[in-house]
Image: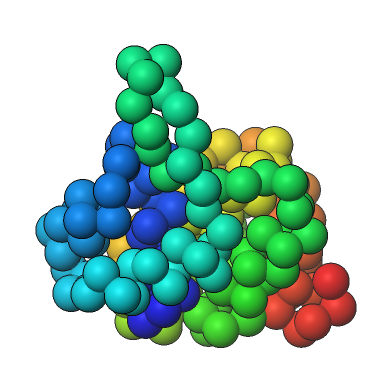
Length: 152
């Protein structure tokens, strides 16, 4: 649940200018996460979110990108904890996850920022990705398997 909630927080702050923890709590509740302010505060601290200035002079939460290794480890943990099965056909990839973890895995795929993946769509327990080519789909599946097996 924590991994899914934190993935949703990343998704929310990427798409919205969230100024306060209260705004974030409301947005999370609208997405089905019933959280307290204390939980949000812990998540913000663990995820090392920070506030940055916007063009309009307001503040918003943002991810600090100065520690790529830590972000990378967080992405790997999402795959290790949530992915049940990987499969592909031609350039299409299907990732089966634990119930409720589809969005978390899709956010992790999107945050990998690989040029091999054109996009992903998440359901409750399934993520559908499209690679540019058949070979890139195979390479992506192999990389995800290495992550899940702890080789990367």
